[in-house]
Length: 214
Ligand SMILES: [Zn+2]
Image (cartoon, rainbow, N blue to C red; front, side):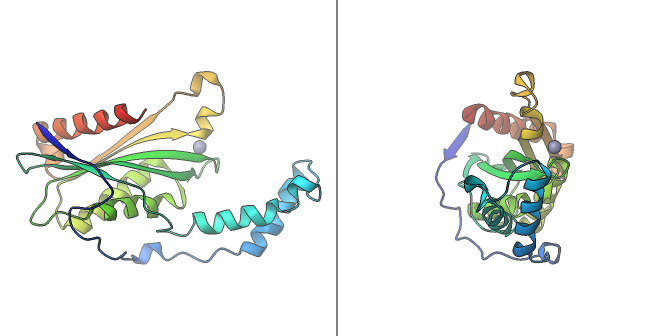
């Protein structure tokens, strides 16, 4: 039996963002990006000076700058707490990233599960973690692992599972047949690897949440 708690508010007050060393990335050279986008338009056979495209290079450069800035926005989360107190599942996190193979958008729906060892982690923290790792050129598998590792560090325990369902425009845009294609990745550590009951409970809750939003 599960007890669902909905809303953007957390189990505990949100902790301030903790920038990890890996996250400090070089600043975007927006001016150069704008010049290059103009050149790309020309190479694609477009006239970058025509009315509709005149501001496009600047707009695209501004978009890249905001996309690559972590913690730009925090997605809404909700949680389901198993009544036994053994399992906390946080879902409802949907972030956009860019696939590094095609530089096309991918939508990633993230469900994270953990067994609290002491204090529960603020819900908004999960959203920020997902947002931070989405704001870069990514592959879904690495995103899943990075989110799991960061949650592991945040809760100070190894019992963490992260499941991600991705919709990749590089697949969906190729034709009607691929439109419904979804990719699911799972990173399961600690008891989620060794306890089949816990693992099954997590997967049931994760797939249930995806079913509810699609
Ligand atoms: Zn791709």
